Image (tube, rainbow, N blue to C red):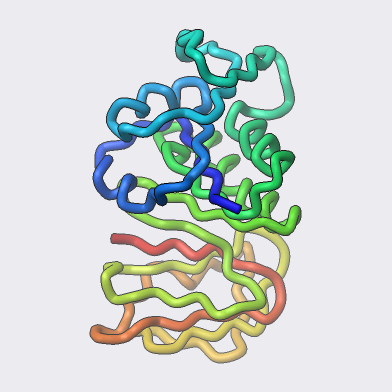
Length: 206
């Protein structure tokens, strides 16, 4: 099955960088003011979702779900749930990291929600690429300037980092001591990261 791309309303400056992640058969869900990115992305919307409190409903010839303004889910969270309901297991979220720290943190938590539903997600913004790492080896190429490991919930143990400036072996990172910030990949190599228990947010910075 193809991948589901969720387009939020946060500002995007590096459209070319974000577009480089798109695949030909991606399924695009535009969330409310995420529609402002549509022309710059030069892609068709497969689904539009929103309460249209921050962007006018285009009333386009595209399937559109109009949400109430009073609700528990943000437009982005609703869009992700809709993608899950339609069977998607792989998600790319763009336009989801911006000036509103509350929305940013809420959108980062979507990665855990996807994991809990047997799916996976990557968040891409102007500066970085974010995903969860757990029970598998994640690789960070030296095309990224830095990478960080952040514990966003619970316990993360058995952490290993190889081929990086700062190495770890069977380590633990807790939510109250985030010492995994701003590591560097050994040039000409790939950093290898694994977590045996729990999960960490892997932030790869360009």
